[in-house]
Image (cartoon, rainbow, N blue to C red):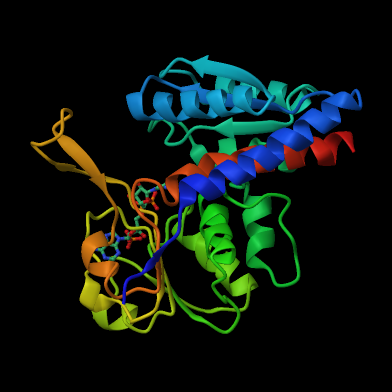
Length: 292
Ligand code: NDP
């Protein structure tokens, strides 16, 4: 079997076009353009690059980006004051605090402070709590897991009743992905670093979401024939044929998996582009909730 590749770049582009059209339609009705505030503490190059990509997406989709670069040694009180000011600013519809924060800051307190109506990353304990409760709807779903489910649905994969395995239990990917799958009536197993007999467990999956950050750890013979495999991992491995000296691979061995899986996302070009597309979708939703 050769897996059908799920083209995240193309699907993300469609989401972005739909969002841009809605933003333009709202502007034509005289409504304010959605505003996204990005809070970047310190100067980690990877975080700065992610924030720059989010600002660029705002511009491309007709939204307004408010960037708040803050010094790495900012105090907890000063950072909380920034968040309170953004909560109170009517031009700001969404607030994104780029993670990770420097170690001296209390991430939990900062995320809890973001107004639930502006929590476009979906990391506020209120949104996550609602996601975890039966019959409750979060206002926003975390962007990467939201993108994973969107890709499955676009590919026509049946989630209801499926045996789904999520590799990884992080707050930003694994756990919310598992909660979303439960909400869509899959039977879900969450695996982590202490899981025993991992290949055997993974072989039960009709749907596999891999988010562990271990280059090509999931081998072809771990995968049930015909399974839908969503590879969230982004790992740089040495490659002397590249100018940069490295290339990006996922948590799944792509060449082996494509011979066994029914559906497969590539890395890059799978889940990656969906994260920002879903952030833009969430920011538009925030504006719709706040402005009507
Ligand atoms: P974390 O490091 O926060 O979490 C990793 C999870 O994997 C943990 O739950 C950990 O278990 C588990 N794990 C680690 N090693 C193993 C192992 N050998 N066997 C089984 N489980 C293991 O990572 P993130 O969730 O933040 O990210 C995961 C991957 O997804 C990374 O490659 C990251 O770059 C990528 N990513 C991609 C995004 C995108 O836009 N495409 C967005 C966010 C992340 P335990 O809990 O026991 O420690």
